[in-house]
View 1: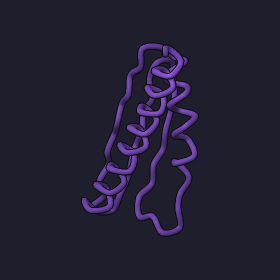
View 2 (view 1 turned 90 degrees about the vertical axis):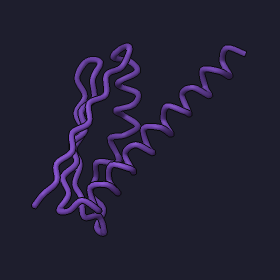
View 3 (view 1 turned 30 degrees about the horizontal axis):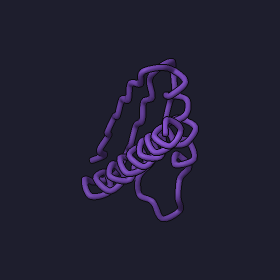
Length: 86
């Protein structure tokens, strides 16, 4: 049984969506040791990520990785924004 996870991120504007997309795009490349596959699409203010894994353990690991990357990008942009406004 394959597990398929779809994540949809909607941003305030297309510029912010594009920043996230460009930062996340390299993570789409398959890793030889990885058991999951992912694809990412960008359109307007939206990013769609799809993860396909052979089992729940792999799917959960992949999902956690994507969430960590998204969180890291968000934290970095927040820090930059805070420094610019100081």
